[in-house]
Length: 152
Image 1 (cartoon, rainbow, N blue to C red):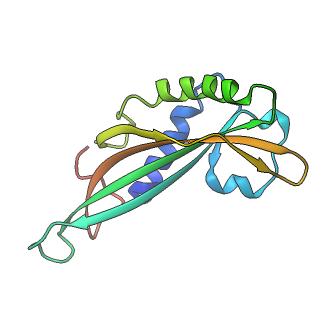
Image 2 (cartoon, helix red, strand yellow; image 1 turned 120 degrees about the vertical axis):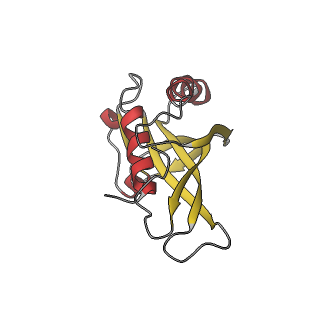
């Protein structure tokens, strides 16, 4: 079974793939390749993790709290009124991301954290407009089982 971090990233991508205003949902590394207009608007997903093991437990049986920050970068073509267009897509994304029920076990303390400023990113052949939404939550595992959520 994949790492719980991978499970969370894939569950987020699956959920966002049902948002009608999006034409694609990809891993953040998708930025390394060019986009065609029929790929946009899109969301790029990255998951950042910090963790802490419970003190006093035995190696291999230590409960680990894995705190996640989920970065959702909304990407659009550079169009007129880009801020309004990207905010419209963000409304759909935020509505889709309300629930912590991802089908991978309990994601505790799930919440929306922040949104970055709109940024223009030059590419080889165009300029993309991006804005990142940030979510956070926690998953419990054992140190020896980073692929198993302790709370199904």
